[in-house]
Length: 586
Image (tube, rainbow, N blue to C red):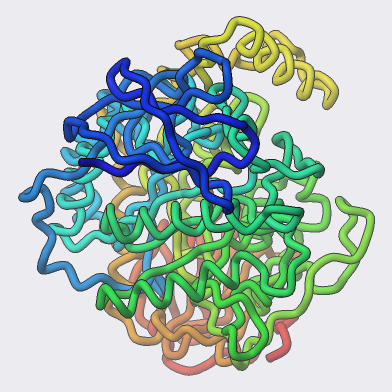
């Protein structure tokens, strides 16, 4: 016998459909309906609400073999499916994470084809693979952020069995696995949750209706979210989650859902005997996210830090539009590298108000913030999905890498950045509903046309060619400067692993010197100095020592190091320099 249960306080009658046969269900006072039925281990099933004959998938569906509109399927991994028994896990703090999209990471676009590239990632030196959302969403391909059945694994990637194989393969290679989980909204295709109960609130966010986590009857919705998060870590052996846009989780209760989730994650980690990490994506610059719970924070392990990205990108690339408006100077870059946030209670020109709060660098290590030069957002949300590698020189890409990976922060790469991939990463979707497909295409073109773009230049998200263009071209990874850049990334990551001074997680000992006019900046990390020339002309940087790693051909004498345009050098210093024009306060 198998027990079937569903929380459905809205309908007056719920029936269970198992392989085409209907069974009555019994309602409890808490809105849960249950029944026990003889069923095959892989039975197809769903729920029929009131007098509507449509069979709806289970909100907690373990598998959707025919897509998000059809019946769910019972699923458990085979008894011998898991082979990662020796994996002890690790925290993400201070490590290097590799963000990838399963559908475009390889030509095959599946979990199994991703396994074929894991040895490459091991050689690169990364510690974690972070998968963009793999929950079930409408259509065959998309970014995954419009998921509607959060418990199920997207079937075209290989379904739950394929994910098990990928995680086994990662753990066998000592690669941790993180899942990108979206709990702030539901996608438009296959969203039936409101038929069952009050999953949505009266509020909204940029992606649609908000999730009900603090209105009436929110307790079961909160449980739905937390149980889903724990399922990825417990049942699928993942090492943690990246939580999408947590600033869109509007919670007015005394115990924020992130704090509740962090507490339950820590309890699960103790039960499993291995570390589990929660990474929040937030644009609030609020240190409470990563402050321990016993000090009044939420207890997240780490947080994406867009200020670091913006400061590096604007300084190197020269972009100033939109949210880059307050960034671009080396002073801003130095302040951000030194203090974690740039907007820390100061005025934000982009937001037209004060933003953020200072980070207590004496008690919160830099490893609780993620530094990166690229993410899926920072490429795919551009009008044509162009990467920095399509606009910058390889020297500029190398400088960006040295600033991010040479910093004290936890590092993150987006797939292909390490070789300067020539492939764009564009916004793509495959909504099967004609009206939704048309609205997505027109909305994308209209959005960027309002910002001055020619609508005809905006890739059609629904065109399969947009998806195909976004796949990585693995044939170029050793070509010329692509190969040189990849080796530089590999060496930068190795230095993080092998040099204790680069592994120091604290910001206070780090000194940052720069010269705004000459366009050089130096991060002093103990005995190591990460010196970068962001300008096009050669400069004399007042730091000297033994060259450990460089892009370009630095020339070192007793007083200074000469860096060619768009280059960097990491030096084991002879003595600390003291001639910089504008040091950043310690």
